[in-house]
Image 1 (tube, rainbow, N blue to C red):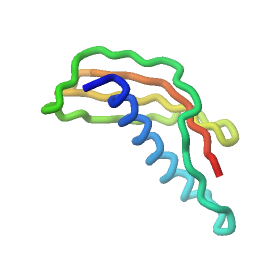
Image 2: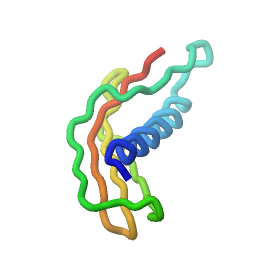
Image 3: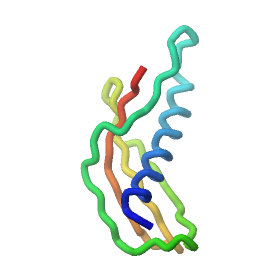
Length: 93
Protein backbone atom coordinates (compact mmCIF):
# COMPACT_ATOMS: atom_id res chain seq x y z
CA UNK A 1 0.00 0.00 0.00
CA UNK A 2 1.30 3.48 -0.74
CA UNK A 3 2.66 5.46 2.17
CA UNK A 4 0.20 8.29 1.56
CA UNK A 5 -2.74 5.92 2.09
CA UNK A 6 -1.16 4.51 5.26
CA UNK A 7 -0.69 8.03 6.64
CA UNK A 8 -4.24 8.98 5.64
CA UNK A 9 -5.60 6.00 7.58
CA UNK A 10 -3.70 7.20 10.65
CA UNK A 11 -4.92 10.79 10.15
CA UNK A 12 -8.53 9.58 9.87
CA UNK A 13 -8.11 7.61 13.10
CA UNK A 14 -6.75 10.75 14.76
CA UNK A 15 -9.81 12.66 13.57
CA UNK A 16 -12.02 10.04 15.20
CA UNK A 17 -10.11 10.46 18.47
CA UNK A 18 -10.51 14.24 18.31
CA UNK A 19 -14.20 13.82 17.59
CA UNK A 20 -14.68 11.62 20.64
CA UNK A 21 -12.69 13.94 22.90
CA UNK A 22 -14.33 17.10 21.54
CA UNK A 23 -17.82 15.74 22.21
CA UNK A 24 -16.94 15.48 25.89
CA UNK A 25 -16.13 19.20 26.10
CA UNK A 26 -18.42 20.59 23.38
CA UNK A 27 -20.90 23.31 24.09
CA UNK A 28 -24.40 22.58 22.81
CA UNK A 29 -24.53 26.09 21.28
CA UNK A 30 -21.28 25.82 19.30
CA UNK A 31 -21.33 24.49 15.73
CA UNK A 32 -19.53 21.20 15.05
CA UNK A 33 -15.90 21.59 14.01
CA UNK A 34 -14.03 19.53 11.43
CA UNK A 35 -10.51 18.30 12.29
CA UNK A 36 -7.97 18.89 9.51
CA UNK A 37 -4.31 17.88 9.34
CA UNK A 38 -2.22 21.00 9.82
CA UNK A 39 1.32 19.63 9.86
CA UNK A 40 3.22 16.38 9.48
CA UNK A 41 6.35 16.35 11.63
CA UNK A 42 7.83 12.94 10.88
CA UNK A 43 6.82 9.89 8.92
CA UNK A 44 8.79 6.65 9.10
CA UNK A 45 8.03 3.65 6.95
CA UNK A 46 9.48 0.52 8.50
CA UNK A 47 8.10 -2.29 6.33
CA UNK A 48 5.89 -3.07 3.39
CA UNK A 49 2.13 -3.34 3.90
CA UNK A 50 0.30 -5.52 1.41
CA UNK A 51 -3.42 -5.20 0.62
CA UNK A 52 -4.04 -8.61 2.22
CA UNK A 53 -2.43 -7.52 5.54
CA UNK A 54 -4.39 -6.39 8.58
CA UNK A 55 -3.21 -2.97 9.71
CA UNK A 56 -3.74 -2.23 13.41
CA UNK A 57 -3.67 1.52 14.07
CA UNK A 58 -2.91 3.18 17.40
CA UNK A 59 -3.17 6.92 18.06
CA UNK A 60 -1.76 8.80 21.06
CA UNK A 61 -2.66 12.37 21.94
CA UNK A 62 0.64 13.97 22.94
CA UNK A 63 -0.52 17.51 23.65
CA UNK A 64 -3.37 19.93 23.08
CA UNK A 65 -2.64 23.63 22.59
CA UNK A 66 -5.82 25.71 22.11
CA UNK A 67 -7.33 24.34 18.90
CA UNK A 68 -4.22 22.37 17.88
CA UNK A 69 -3.97 18.67 18.71
CA UNK A 70 -0.48 17.10 18.55
CA UNK A 71 -0.65 13.36 17.98
CA UNK A 72 1.49 10.34 17.28
CA UNK A 73 0.18 7.39 15.35
CA UNK A 74 1.44 4.06 14.19
CA UNK A 75 0.37 1.08 12.18
CA UNK A 76 1.35 -2.49 12.92
CA UNK A 77 1.16 -5.59 10.79
CA UNK A 78 1.38 -8.91 12.63
CA UNK A 79 2.58 -7.03 15.73
CA UNK A 80 5.49 -5.34 13.92
CA UNK A 81 5.63 -1.60 13.35
CA UNK A 82 5.05 -0.75 9.69
CA UNK A 83 4.54 3.02 9.79
CA UNK A 84 4.92 5.81 12.36
CA UNK A 85 3.87 9.43 11.95
CA UNK A 86 3.70 12.49 14.20
CA UNK A 87 1.24 15.16 13.14
CA UNK A 88 -0.95 18.01 14.30
CA UNK A 89 -4.58 18.70 13.61
CA UNK A 90 -6.61 21.86 13.99
CA UNK A 91 -10.35 22.23 14.37
CA UNK A 92 -11.93 24.13 11.50
CA UNK A 93 -15.36 25.58 12.28
